[in-house]
Amino acid sequence: MRSHHDMGGLPAGRCEPDEHEYEMWEKRVDALMMLLSDKERQLLKVDELRRNIESLGADAYDRMGYYERWMHSISQTLIQRGVISIDELGRKMAEIEDRDERA
Amino acid sequence: MNRQQEQDAQDSRGYYRRMQSAIEELLILKGVFSGADVEREVKAMDSRDPGRGAKMVARAWLDPDYKSRVLKDGSAAAEELGFAVGPLRLIVLEDTPSVHNVIVCTLCSCYPRMLLGLPPEWYKSRDYRSRVVREPRKVLQEFGTRIPDEVEIRVHDSTADMRYMVLPLRPAGTERLDEEQLAQLVTRDSLIGVTMVDAQG
Image (tube, rainbow over all chains, first blue to last red; front, side, top):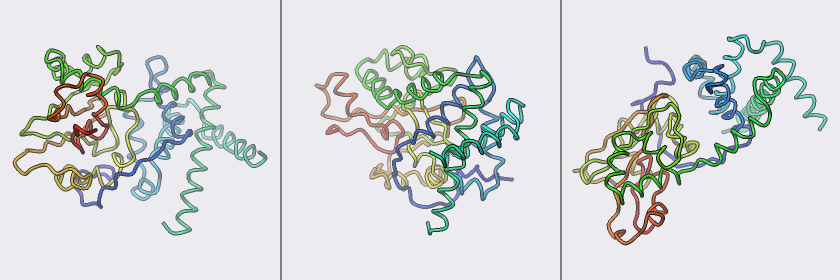
């Protein structure tokens, strides 16, 4: 069966040549991918990045922004590999939310 | 987008932005990399722009030997000009008066990022990825490019390990230009293949 990300040849809308300035957090997601997948670290394979993006439901895939999908996938891979725990990530995110609110 | 969708999109951005900060901080704490490593990667990506691909094209237009090396092994030809391509295989596709090439990544967003920088938003869009393989002539028209019917259009679907870049046709009226002036005319979109190089720049 054709998976959701496999969209070549399907009907779709008109191409709008929209440009988008990358935001700093998006560049940092990209930097994480580059670092984690380099020779020295080898903590992320491009196939893992793709698998964890492609396993998103059709709905989530469409709703999420490009680097949101990447970020989801990077965190899933790190959890699957045991580099970080889901608990640790949740606590850190809560801490950051707290910090941002106070700022 | 209606107001609710706008709000949801904002919440989602905030959530993933926090996730990015959290993962970066955790991995620094664990010694996987340093903050300086992240800054260095961001800077390196900022420094990659279509000027690199444009330089390869201008050189290939002027130097037939270089051109044959470009077409034989794009990665090596890029490295020759000091542009590291890494483990990816780079294939350069030559336009001719009878063949026009276009690149896409239908499955995601693979792109010659080492030579062109990060891809434009539309390259990653559903509309481009879905349609350019089925009705390229029509899609190119949406970019303002009309390819004559007698010219064949070839669409190349990239993969994670294999990236394409187009070597566009050198426009007439550029015979007196030097490499730097020629490179100025070569745009990002012409290296993707959705536009042609214009002698007026």
